Length: 437
Image (tube, rainbow, N blue to C red; front, side, top):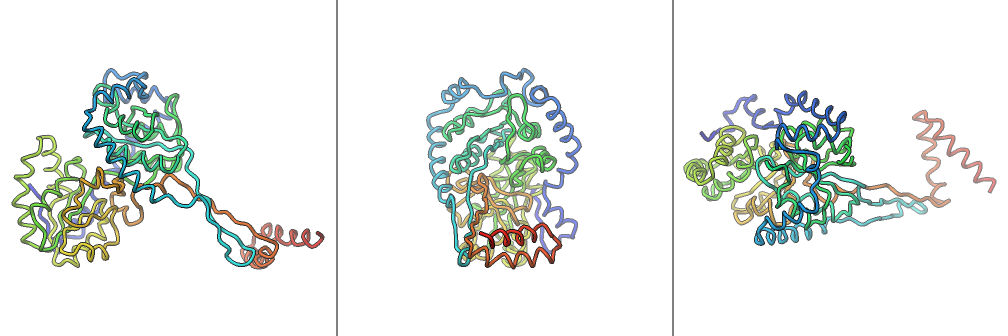
């Protein structure tokens, strides 16, 4: 059953539930995830192996925790030349896009005579990348994370990714890592992987920051470990809004509605339109398209489109746009007659794709944009993963004698007002020292 809602008819509670989507479930997981985090902190690799045996592979042992050189060689042999060529082509576009983001290493500006201020940009020393696997293999996520990290020149890049049923990393993911120049890949997933990066274990190094999307358990671990490690942007279950006006082709809208819905049952995929004919057309063609999917993906799509997703009918394009800005989707596709005009009215979205020839799958894989995006409404204040996620800025300043003399009186006055006598003393005594030079 595909949920068909009319925005004007929703109660406040129904609207709040629609807006909050799967992120609401995280709080109920916190006690369970806290136990996992505590075990990893106390027992290190032993805990990682125990959790892998319980949830991933019964024969898992410590020798499988880090992908070996032999694993990388075997991955190359296991992945077809066609897939390797596709990974390389995607990597090329993603790298070109992210190179455009690299800021100046340092800038300096004279604010007034003798007063110089600027910034120095340096890479974060160590970063962990979380590449999920649970409902599929994601070499594309490896590309989206490792490419900007490498462009930013992070000295140490560590990857964690859940094991397949045989206890090893996905071959395509290892090939993508190798293409990006990454050789530290640890075969561990879930909340235990985030804890390992936060605390360090015998094998997994502690890092300064972790970046990457994950399921609700990963999101819960990030929430618990905020303060122990920089957890990066909130990237949880996938979500998309397909925004249509009356000129949209229902067949295209329906196709693109399935894209994020097939990620998993906790995803969200919404068609938002003021056109009843478009909404009805999408509703008509969706069942046939869903039937073309494999059974396990059909199940995901069915749960999404009857839950956090479906069709939302508004009363006008203005209402649709207002809803989108309030919802702040991860992916936003504009199937409107004039998408560039609509674009000017969009305020909150992780990415915005314009027109029927720019569908979500191309952006997810090879267009060049980063597909690791804020979810759960956090697009109101967060941006997509970029080179900037792997860099930090340090303020830099220099004062000449003239500049110092221009500013010291201002600072003394403010220090006296705020009752910081040491601040004022450092300047008053400095003036005495300078006067005897």
